[in-house]
View 1 (spheres, rainbow, N blue to C red):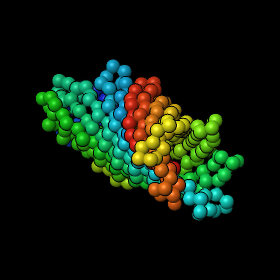
View 2 (cartoon, rainbow, N blue to C red; view 1 turned 180 degrees about the horizontal axis):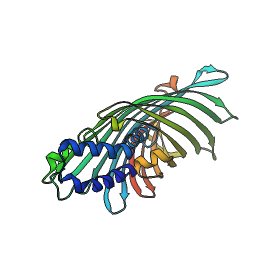
View 3 (cartoon, rainbow, N blue to C red; view 1 turned 60 degrees about the horizontal axis):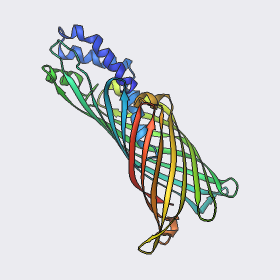
View 4 (cartoon, helix red, strand yellow; view 1 turned 180 degrees about the vertical axis):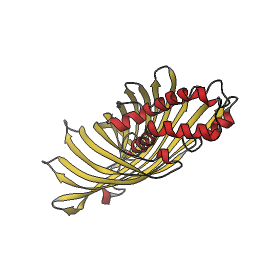
Length: 327
């Protein structure tokens, strides 16, 4: 369970004793106070930042909550990017990118307000939809390396959908609606990033491509279902990716089929780590690429690939399966 959720759960346990004598409005006021003190709004902003990042295209994660029910996480991202060699500024190619992301997390909680008229057990699903564009300049550094500083700007929406069970489920739902559960936020996502790309040949027909990227993701609440969810956050996200490709000796419909093997790593700064409950993970995978450079030569599209991988980290396991356009 992410840190902010653990803090909120602990706070609600402390409120359980007086809850028996309180009205729905009294409990709602206390819940809003706990949410504000626990920086719940910052936690929500961190979720949107993770959903907006380029990276694994389709993945399923399981987060270990240390004896509590695990959090089930799904993520789908469509990252598109290109360096426009025909559009050059200061000797650098214009770099554009767009990442469309969707994130969902399912979490079962323990019983809140046990022994009171508010006793209930929540079961939550959080969904996030994001779109973030990037614009920068890809400067050549040597013959096969580029350094690209860029700025990102985008929008995210995060919603919580929670069902309650237990004798006080209806009262608990009214007391928490729009604050702790069944809430929604709209967010502005922006910030600088810098990435380093390198490509080379290893042997006769084996290629290597590597990318390292540092992102400072800033987020501000545009609108929220309750003032306790408003806030701002900043998170550093570091990523690295290395990939080998080589010939399989096979073709599909006259097009070359190549094998892929890759390794990647992601590390989260404080705000993102608190929101997700993990510091980072590594990804190991393989795939196949169909090469066809004649489809859209204007944007250097080389083909498409199908990839599968495993995801491992401290407190996180998962897998990924997805397709990707190759540039």
